[in-house]
Each structure stands twice: as C-alpha cells, then as structure tokens.
Image: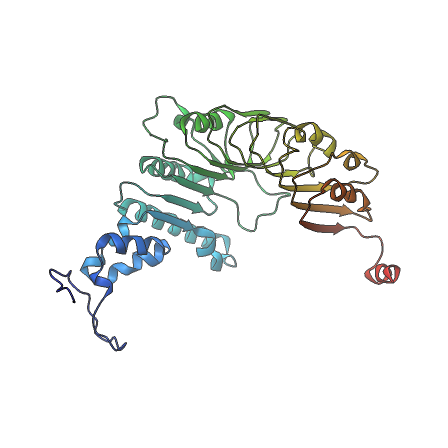
Length: 370
C-alpha cells in the first residue's frame, strides 16, 4: 500500500534535467535532513546551493560545521606578487567574515580555520574566537602556520591568544568544548590553565609552535584529557603531566619531562632531537608508563657514541615501534637494535631515515654494500 503524500514542500525547477524521472526527490526531504547533507560539504559548496531555488537560500546558514581551509583556497595565488597575494588573502578574510555573520545556527559542532594571518589581522581572529565560544562549539581548530612552512628559520606566531578570554569573569560557557587545537598561536601558561580549568569535558588538546613560558604543568585528578600534543614550545624547560585518563601523548622540544599518574597512557610520541632533551632524560619519565605502552614513536638524532638506548628496559606490551632518525654523516644505526630487543611482543616496526652530509658518493656506498 502506497501512502498518499500531502503538503509536499515547494519543488525546485527541474527544467533541463534528463535523468528519466522529472520528480525532484531531494526537495521532498525535510529541512533538517538537507542541513545534515549540506554540513558534509565545504562551506563554499554548501553556500553555492542557495541559487537552486528560494527554499535553499538560507538552508546552508544552518549547517553545524564550518571549515575554512584558506591554504587550499589560496594555493593558486602562491606565484603572484606579494601585493596581489595580500589582496587575495584580504578578500578571503572578508569572505570568512561574511559567512560567519550570515550563519544562523545557534550552535555548531566544529569550526576549523587554517590559513596564515598577518599581525594587523589579529582583531579579526579574536572575533572568530568569540564566535566559536558563543556557539558552544565542541571542536575548535585554529592553524595559522605560514605558507610553505619550514621548521628552521620560520617566523614566530603572529597572534597572541587574548588575555581577556582568560579572565575568570568571562561570559562564555566552555563546558561544551571537547577538542581544541591551536597551531602557531602564542599561548601563555595562564591560557592553558584557563582551558583546563574551564573545559571539564576537554578530551583532545593540541598546541604547536608557541613560546612565552619556561615551565608547564598539566595536572588534575578530574581531567578528562585523553589526547595531548605539545610540540615546539620554544624556551620551555620543564613539563609535568598528571592526567589519569590520558591515553595518547605527543611532545617535542623541552628539557625535562615528568610523568605521574598516567595509568591509561599506551601511546607515546617523543621528540628527542633538535633540543636539549635526550634519551637519557627520557628514561626516568618513561618508567611511569613502560608496562602499559602499546605504541612508541621516538624522533632521534646524533646517536654517535651514545649508550643510552642500551639501558632501555623491556617493553612487555609494545606492539608498534616507530623511529624517525636524522643522521649526520655516517652514523651507525646499531644502537637502535637495543629498542627492538626490548620489545618482546613487537608486531610492527617502522624506521624513517633522513641523511645529511654523506662523505661518500652513492656509487661508493653501493660498492661497499656489494
């Protein structure tokens, strides 16, 4: 038995459609379903549907996700003159502002902004933060990495997270925030403490390329934190972490690491290169999670004459071992075998090598191998 359809929404014009069925089935769907579909598209694609018919004009303004990937959108301008690049970026910023001002949803599930901003555009980004917080966004990602980013010689962050947001009297409710990623944003220790204290359900916290602190503590028996990434904290000497729900930790560039009360930690990524941190300093912190680790990634360099790897204790549950090694000259890789021997239940081993300043030619090396 076929139920008779009543009060169908106004259909869009199907003139010119030659698919064999002139019925516009998409327009028969309720608005809520259409908004969900539009949320799966990019912002530009979703907004372009407004030209279909009058019913679609405002549908995209109720999507629950906004993803502004400026790096991809402005890729074609990379070969233009600097003045033209600046004009194109300014147009893109104005477009983002217009989208945010037009958006009508009271809450959004995700806001992602990824493109380089100049110092003079800092006020604009502050407004974007305000928009995200006012919409009670659970997932917020801000990536201001400069184009063609190279670690060495790259400028520092242009944007400093506003101190007014860290004021205890802030009017924003951040209890909905579950995932926060800040890259190339200068974040103070007070700002990090602010998020930890005011986001009780924060499970994922990522901070890359920042400065302005020497010591950092991420501690609390009630922290919901499960995934933590702290990379390239320039000037940071000491990191202390105590988080009972933490399962994954990625950390690079520091001098001292202290791990306490991390009973759930089973995935660890540590950068021991390009900093004062060494394998020797890792061992004391490593003892807090050695018995439970299932995945370990080490970024190493300059192992010449080092015996620290030989002191690595047995890792009874380790299933995956990844070593990224930067070799200068003709360093021996034999010390790495100690890590393999310590992994008694290893199932996957990945070795990533970068070679610099080889003293012999490829032909000489090939001959030696033969």
